[in-house]
Image (cartoon, rainbow, N blue to C red; front, top):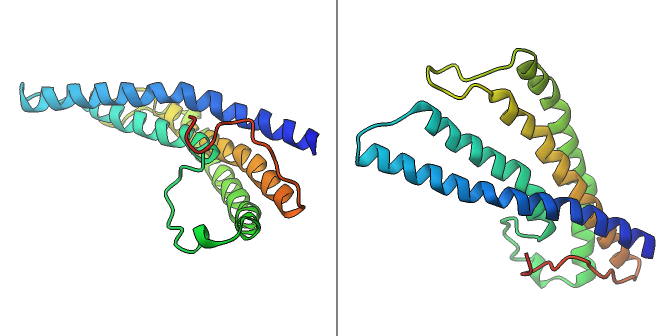
Length: 180
């Protein structure tokens, strides 16, 4: 069990490190949106590249930050019944959710987006709009990367819940539930 816990902690560290780094994208996004709003409403000017940059940053933040969000169990969900269940029942739901939905879902998105991303890279796709950003292929590459990071975080999630089901109480290395 100690070996599994070490593996889980190392996989957690991947998304913890990436998540802390990607958090600066949120700050950058706030600055870009603020400048865009000021330019639009004060100076009556707008630029295509700024609007595209907003959605590129938004996509980057949410795609690459999703694994970090899963690490801290911070995804939005309606858990009217889940919260009332025993820890073992919650572990069953989490484990089966990973095996039946999370891993297959991540695989499907990675597999189906691969050709989409490769085609974009092959032509060095840019914005079709005059004045738009030149490297649209970079943001498209974040699709499989983001879902790979979610799948990577699903491994310790599934393993820790499996340990609970086996009667072993895993000790988490991260400071989940509040210590981001």
